[in-house]
Length: 286
Image 1 (cartoon, rainbow, N blue to C red):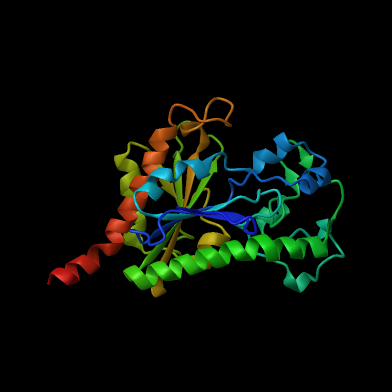
Image 2: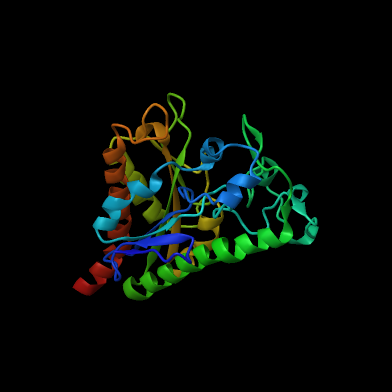
């Protein structure tokens, strides 16, 4: 089932009452570029698309078909990055300049990949002029906050129903060098998910024949930091997938491995759910 109101910057996929405590998040595959956004950019749409995690929204269908729900962003990352905190803003790109006390300095912001991306490597500055503070506030109110609220609401519903909730935040990364892991799991260095759950996800990936690493070079962003609260029974894990595993040579269209990676995401979601529910099953059987 898809819930796709025109007033929302995202879609909800999956059954109304999910059969799994795992909720999938796809924050960087949005392709709904407005005319106003394109007009404000000095770069063509093809360059803005470099910010995307291409087609990751189409990879989650097997997990959804198996009973999980998914929240999929339609708003593009160029408009606002849902995996950044509201304060991760380059003050030089906002007019009037925001109060420094409200900002969060981070390597991502300094590198041009803050709440609103300002630069793309190899392409330069994205925007023709600085962004008005009122427009920034609109994007936060209409896109960023509703997305995170929906994640929080879905996770709380899962926690009430299953006693536990797990957010699997799905991303893709540029092709890795030979010898490097092609899947990277981020758990905020052990802070966003229980160790046994992270280990279950790793085991599912290795069983699929793929090398996996933890937290290097991606440890998770705002989504795992905000929603992962293991002590409260709500866990969050970021999953980065090498784009060459599922895309063609141009890294834009589906490649030969597309279905394999769709199966992998479903397998990771299943492993997380199975491990999360194991103690409950054991207690019920006693």
